[in-house]
Length: 113
Image (cartoon, rainbow, N blue to C red):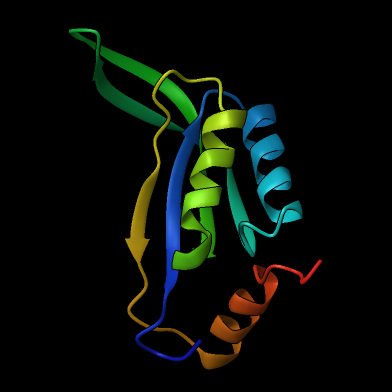
């Protein structure tokens, strides 16, 4: 997967550390992500929900995947997540080290069986 890559970074927030770890473990085990960073210190989120401004502590997932795996990754996150409307933001990757991008692509490649 060279520069001009199909690599993607997906941001997902979770309401607690256990849920974040469970989602991270599941998507890597299913080869939907090559790596997930779980930001284990809570981030403070301020957002509008049901016409109120809400402040919450959340745990951020930084998920590395490819464009080909995005649909199944999103389905898995939505299935595993406790929120009514989970964050699922996709950021394109303009480039990176060839070795890392090759590893990422290989890590999410579906097996033939």
